[in-house]
Image (tube, rainbow, N blue to C red; front, side, top):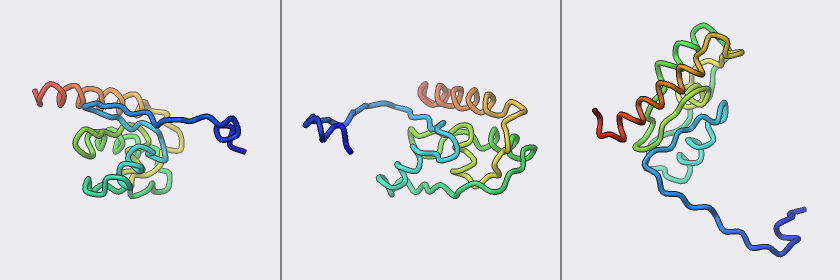
Length: 115
């Protein structure tokens, strides 16, 4: 049952305008996935994660954190999905925090014009 339809409510989509979007949605990389379907000219396509390898994934996630398309950035486990990196099997060495910090710094730099 669809409660919106049952109540005869009309819902409008939410529109936002922004200069930067960060996909930190985890294993499914939802934002990058939707962008790749709806804006094919971005030429981004999530590759999908590989089998778990905590030690290599922790390092690679931080290394690959960053811009995937103009105005679209990726951090955390979404990076594994987008770049085909191994799953972590548990983020135990701080890569999620380091990835988020790196993404924030890259976004700030880009918004300031690449300082």
